[in-house]
Image (cartoon, rainbow, N blue to C red; front, side, top):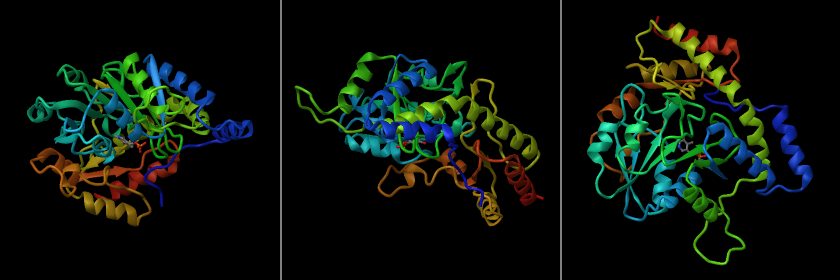
Length: 348
Ligand SMILES: *Cc1c(COP(=O)(O)O)cnc(C)c1O
């Protein structure tokens, strides 16, 4: 089976990690600091703080923005449950909004409709590697924006890096994300106030005052991996773009909707999502031919029991019709050709 996703790891990560282990200093230390510094340079924001997951980064971002129990936080219907978890950790209320039918990102018009005086933050995930072209409009609403770049690190919005427009941004380095430290996350912002709060919440020991803090630290083993992976990120992204262009060329004349190639944003093709009314059959066909096609998200958020009822017409259609084809730097040319050929064969 060609897996749906795989990390790309090499000798560089192996020797960086074994160097840390030999040193005996394996907790958060110099390597994490160096990773934070290099990530800050890469993204173009003054301040960064590494943590142990993207979910932890979201949790700390919400606290730093002073979101409290009972406040509302907006999220899209098509995203993983990590966002709900972070909101529920602080007892806030998720407000689920619909998405756009073209870029599959949070819909500005629907957020306007559903936000209230109690809305204290918007979590804006740049989904599937395509940054939201509406990021500036969300920012202009006057509600704090957390840019969730877990799937879009390295993407651009009208020339600006994804993650540099909102108030604070978060990243995930989980094993199957764009680059990885196994588990891991990062917060980034130009605001000293926000990142100082995050760092204070992360370091619980040796403090004069007591407040509830969170042991969300990244280890130097992960930091060392992060440094090596970040060096390879430009190469990872160009490989993803090459595969996306190939799929685009080969699948162009099929009766499917291909991902948007927009002039306003530069995507990194974390996922290659196609839409077809034969989605379920296509996934079954590809899987029986050894290709790990999948739904791009497990389930729409509003479909989890007990969550918001209401109308999500665009998300409903996108979820029903979507198929995520394998796309990652480790795929060989032969595998990429096989995936495209099998997809064509299904529609013959
Ligand atoms: C993976 C992901 C997260 C959560 O990151 P973890 O490191 O797995 O906690 C948050 N948001 C989005 C959009 C993601 O894809």
